[in-house]
Image (cartoon, rainbow, N blue to C red; front, side, top):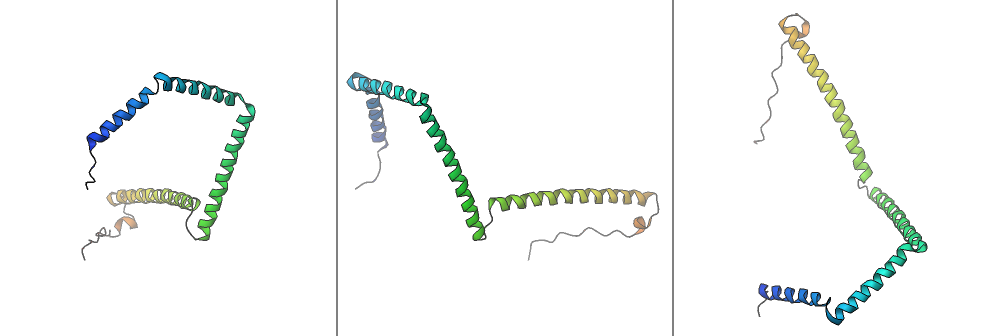
Length: 145
């Protein structure tokens, strides 16, 4: 027994199915569909004008949002109990890292400014810092072992 699917058979089935749907708009079936569509449209219009329905829908949405917020709080509490980082914890770490990066950039800028002054001092002013021997830059360790 073959499990191979005939693609031509699928194309033909698809074509027949679409043709069948197209035929629903013609003849007696098409008339039934048009009447159903008109009835459903009228019912929908009534609901859209019904303030009670709209109020209930709004209340339902509000309750859904409250339920979601309670669920989020419950999940965060559970994550804390399991000592798993929560979204708030991760956000806090990101903020701290951003602050540390900002401070490190400021320190680096100060050091570069002082190095530039020291280099300028070597050429003209005979300061102690300028006379001190300079260290060679550290060589990067190779990953070979």
